[in-house]
Length: 86
Image (cartoon, rainbow, N blue to C red):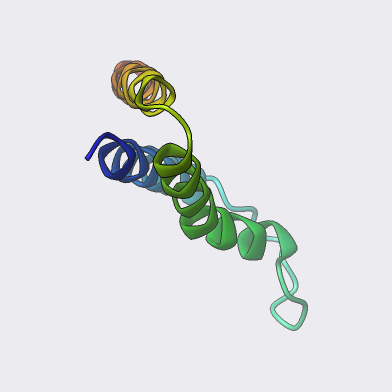
């Protein structure tokens, strides 16, 4: 359960971060070329929580618990910072 919750929290945190960076996309991007940063971000959106879940299930529960609380703290921190931005 802790591994699943930590993976879910990491997915939400990554999604939250990607939504904020999507607003600051440059307009001089060539539409014919692939955006490698966007491709890597999309891969990490799913790969990061997947690895977190696998490691959380494999290792002791204390690691998943640590990841869960640190990710929840990061979500809170990002929410405060994004709310403070004009």
